[in-house]
Amino acid sequence: MADGSDLGALIGGDKTAWDAFVRRYVALVTSAVRGVARDGTDVEDLVQEVFLRLCKDGYRLLKTYDPARAGLTTWLTIVSRSTARDALRRRQMPTTHIDAVPEGLLAVHDKPYEPLRLPDAMLSPRQKLVLTMLYDRDMEVSEIAESLGVDPQTIRSTHHKAMLKLRTYFAEEQNK
Image (cartoon, rainbow, N blue to C red; front, side, top):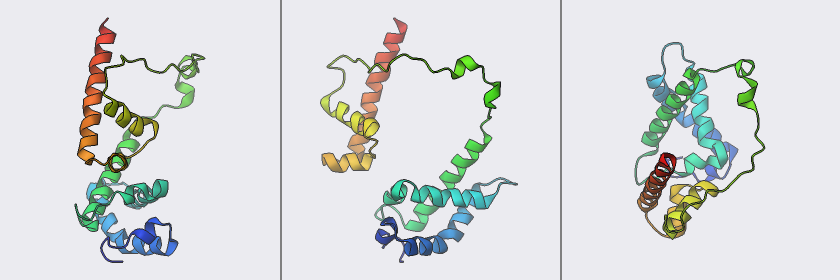
């Protein structure tokens, strides 16, 4: 497998291709993770977490690799470091035993779900569509851009502007 040139079989779920990919890049991932890990951190667990993240949800993250933007080794190094940092942050988060939490905080309220009511003209039709695709359909920015025939930056910009409008609206509502 050349550097990122043939990921199709891997993404298609070919176990042999996955095994070859892991063998080829485990040293690179380990090295990247070691640069982030602190003393006493189990590097092997972090490496495992990187490979799990790459194949999770039908290789969703691996499908985002774009050879026009970076070489596969560069991309894998960045993914490995960020995954290791995220894992280390999660491990540092304080945890509370469930018995220590007051029961009232764990109670499920019978209040039915109420959809948000926004003024009709607040968001443009495109902003509504982008938010629906991002949050209701759980689509990636690149998927939305491709389906709408626009640049991914246009989707990010549309999302940002819609969120600014919503934040302003809800801040005003809260102050009333």
